[in-house]
Image 1 (cartoon, rainbow, N blue to C red):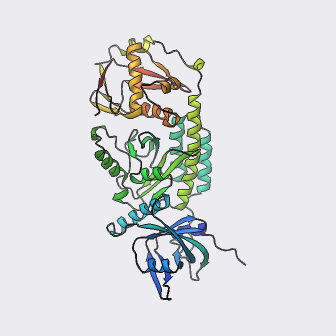
Image 2: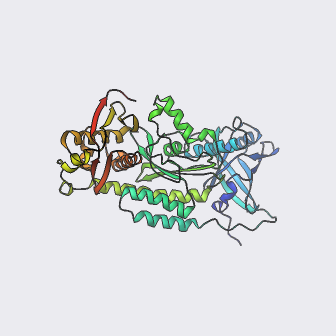
Image 3: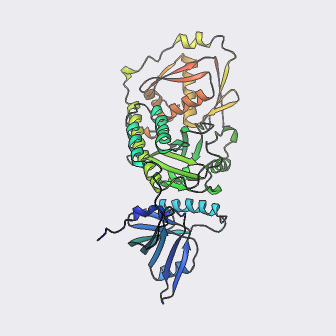
Length: 457
């Protein structure tokens, strides 16, 4: 006797490439067969069906919770019949948001954006799965060994000893091992309920420092729900750049201080995975592709595993950066070489403008950064100009009231990396150079003029 079929073994049938059929029966025995817009894998014992209209199928299920579902493997055309039992309808939460995002992509792809609106996710228990007779095609060879890719990425992550290298090498490994050549890592700013880009790969512009509010676009929804969000077709509703721009306008953020979020102009597939550690949301790992249906359940599982390893490593390295001792810290006194000779004859003074309300920083008329990273830079240049200081530690910066960091969850080390990258990309006459764990130096090559302005820009 053969073993019963497992639901997770036929997940490819639930991707929606070939629509599923559902057969229901009314309370008085009248059958009905209909096509389904979406079937979602929930766990090894449950699926969820999209509830969009109060139609015959919906009426039948409420009256008689038993249904038959036929799904098809898009690669082999093997067909499977499932016996399912309706349990409940979810109208919010991670499952609902996953299905809502996917349905938006399907609707946009089929020209039905004004019709396909998810009202709820109907959860069913799968009680039986049977393979239907019929000819099938041979399965194509796997695109790549995802388990091996996860293993290599995990080994790479565990070998990293500093946060900046960890982020860059992880994105490089994802490109090499998974063939995912466009990806971002965003970190959470808890107080502002926003994510900011700290590392990217494969885009024309790095987008370091760009922001995404929680709940907006694929990235923001994945962060808010702390669940993977995956779309296989382009959709304007979940276009992350558009969502960010609209949110900025709604909140009154001037667009001259907006760093564009990097992304493919012809993105057809998107996958956003939360990065978590010890019950805390750290950020989001995001990938996109110009190919439709590029990311399936297997790629989602693999990147969830990588993101979990990445979250633990980020947490560990942030903790190490906070544990440097005062005896290890370099002197915070003046460095005459950097403050004196290095700033002579290098051109005109650089005006550093600080806007108090949102801690935005401009170098001359060019926007650089805002928020906590802006407050950090302003504190550093103040100490450099008034005291000649060039050497600093994470510990003292964390205790500095000008920076206003409430706790470890504000990712001080990540913000220093963000600031370091932004200064380097702008070819600024100010640089941040790591000198050791939890230690760094401010290097200034031109004289500075500081100007603090009340209000924001």
